[in-house]
Image 1 (spheres, one colour):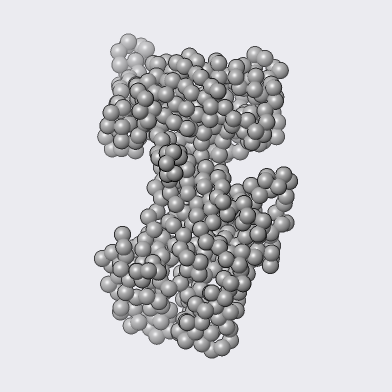
Image 2 (tube, rainbow over the protein chains, first blue to last red):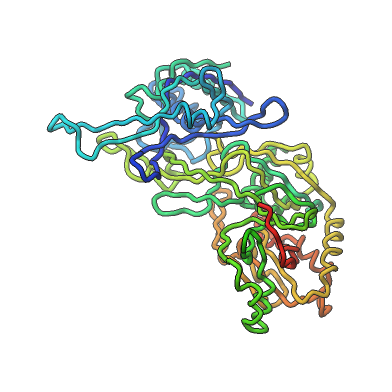
Length: 204
Length: 351
């Protein structure tokens, strides 16, 4: 059995999906919600604009790069994250199966206060524009204005990485290297503009 | 029968639940408003074998479980909150029109006069009779959220994500998934082996559905009420005995039903959704064609009135699971007779 508590501080987030609204809003934030014990025998809702799936995806991406550069970690990568058969991560193929690493969201907070859906709606959610530049004219391209919901506040997110099986020493080595390398990485979209930048990573 | 205990299970989602129901064009996976029986039973049995430290196999008959329907569990002996196909509505009242429709089949359209003013457009409503108030209540259905994800594992998804020479993703990598939001209660009628029930008595956490390693599917499951199978049969026999002189016997489909398994002759009236259902197990698909879906209603001339079948026979039919362990694991052939909702024509919905 393996379990690690990982705390990250990210600046902003843009994990989005196409908007289904009539007005000109192209992308809206994809909020992840789960219930956690409130310490008084009940449950409370935790909301995060960065889901465990997005965090695991970023961790997997970093781990893939590390494993490409250190082939001794290839088996550890496939064992933790499962087969990654697309051509971008040439670590070979193995029979399909779930990786053993599981990720859960424990908490999400801004300025020390747990994120709640209402706070995100009223105070944190912003709409930012972006436009494509026409390379020929040097001016804005016609019809290329995009409006997207984002969060630009600094958030503290706590995830639990765990596995039902014990991890090998190589798997622990890869996981810790990936967590170390996550600082400076970005989770979600508009990473080039600074959204989702991981500023701090701590684990126990 | 090895499934000697009957129970109502209480299930509560702690994380969003992604269970794929139907697949739509454009990579859109729809979710049901209930938790499929195969998902529940599969998770329970997998956990049982994991606790036992052995691989196990579907040849061991451990569980026969209904779908997980929205809402808190009722008392044992009462039906779960089913999405009955014969519901109609007027001014907030739910009425089952199964009996008037059956009467109309025999006596002509004049039997439909009492229900002409009702609105048949109910949609998918999970309704149950509240014992204490004698009123019907609609269980609040769970909310579904639509999320966009990117597929990476070509072996498990129908999409592929490869890199073109320019390094851009190919089309078809994105897919849309409906998920049931966290914090929702569900209940399921379960016939379990003693060893499996032991695991559940103190409550446990299980992961259901897909994307379990990425923050989806965590639920708590515990036993709300249980009793030995023979006691349950006795209780149901007494309840069905009270309807011995009724003109009609009404069967509700609780999970999925192969119509030929219900040996009561031809129904006078039926309204059942017919489904082709695909189950994934042990690396292959199992396809069942032409199943009657949950909430389907079949109305028969009451065989108890003619003496051809007894109340105890019906009670035993309700608890008789399929002989094939795989069919049992998938929750097939579970029915409930004489749901009180069908016999109460003046119901007020407490929304």
